[in-house]
Image (cartoon, rainbow, N blue to C red; front, side, top):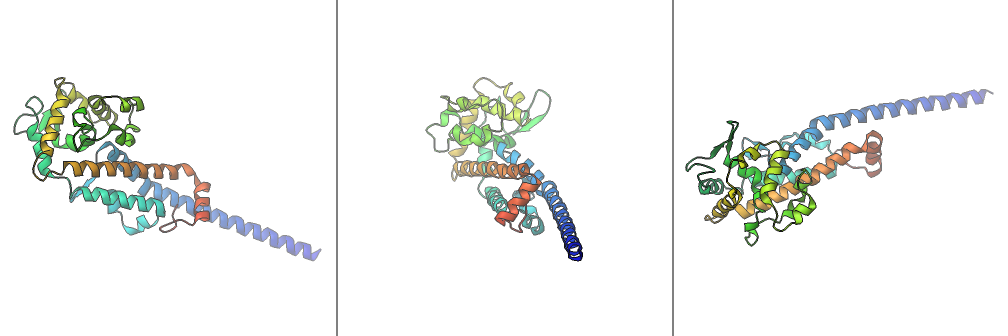
Length: 277
């Protein structure tokens, strides 16, 4: 009888201790997930969405990802696979500032016809009175513009299918649209502008029907400049967009796992640059 009481007491104590430890581990892990979500996942998710659309993050020194600016304590808590993907993405973003040439952008602006942009100017006024800088427009829309049918036989032309990561983010461009011959670049530019609330569609609507051909010709002029980096810039921007899409999917995957699945994932696979979630 005494031994029964001792064994029962040990079992009860052990169960209580296991429950307490489990509760502590789950509480600590839940807090880690919340910390990662608010300090890494959410802000980077917003940045990556912008990058997919063509809007790259910039710092004082030029293009720079938020990830590159985080201190090591924060990056250390991100799991190894995601950290490696973010490292590569941030490196590509940083590399763009040494590739993209201001001279190419200025050549594009200078080649724009007067009905789009007055000679010597770079801004266009929208019907609302808001102005748009065509340098910014080009930076955001370079990849979509490079799908123009007139670039079919030009080295820097982009196959619309190569921008599948972008079309997946917007309504209005279906797989059938991407496969259409010729691809409707003008519609794609308007759809992207509307999806990301840039307001450029109001700009397009006040131009003549041939505005896309004139934009394409202006980019071709920029690409013909001595030492032009238009093709190199396009390729790197495409790589950045692809990397951003893949990294965003990794963050979504982690957000969908839930607490217990995330904890099991760590315990079983022993992941981590810091064994984070």
